[in-house]
Length: 353
Image (cartoon, rainbow, N blue to C red; front, side, top):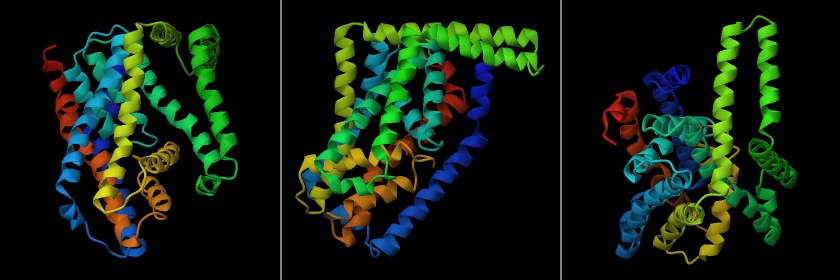
């Protein structure tokens, strides 16, 4: 455990965090500037002040519940796994995840941060890892399975997706996705055998000492077994908690996609929610493959490309900016303060359970 904590402490230090955050800010700023000045003809952001009061109230109310729904989907996954942690602690984890996942490439840091936080609150590594992976798997599976249906209904959207073989990429990705979880649940010994041979090879080449080899193997095998047991336990867990995990995942995704709908209503457009939903699913699908921190640049470009067909050029930049503002930027800003207080300053250790 100490080795893992040492790794996490090095990964989440002030220098690295500020570096990632700076990269995210620079890429986002350049993307927004380009779209505003060149593509969107220099439109202004004060248009928000002209929105009807009911739209403004709806936007900020949605924002409030958006964070709660995000916390509830992880909270009920943890409840299914019989993890003892309060919703308040999970709610703080929402902002840590938003901040870290949006400043690290391919959102890799968010999962580490969540597991680290959960361990600090007494949730074992296997259980916390399983909860975070299951939470991510639920939303990713819903999105990825929706893309083929959307594209089949509207073939013109196929040209907007990356590459000529998008269905092949998607099929291979999903197959690998489910294969990994099949192996973790039903064929764990196969994974352990591969891991053992890999580290044995390193030991045979004198890249690992015998003591270090045994320590690593014991640690990995112990937590892999716990992780596998918790994945299986979730499937067979208390039905009400499993149902609520799925339900709040759906509600969270609908809430996230509703920001664009409300902003468009505020701008005076009458586009069906279903059309907005399909466009947002495609945007998020593209973002999953973006190598930049928080999909910066890719998110703005993909969103502008898809929505440019439905709005005037002068409205494209306000729509893009406020979509990112409500769905990401506010959460990231809150996450900065929560992260530095709870992890960097060690406030997480001093909290009462």
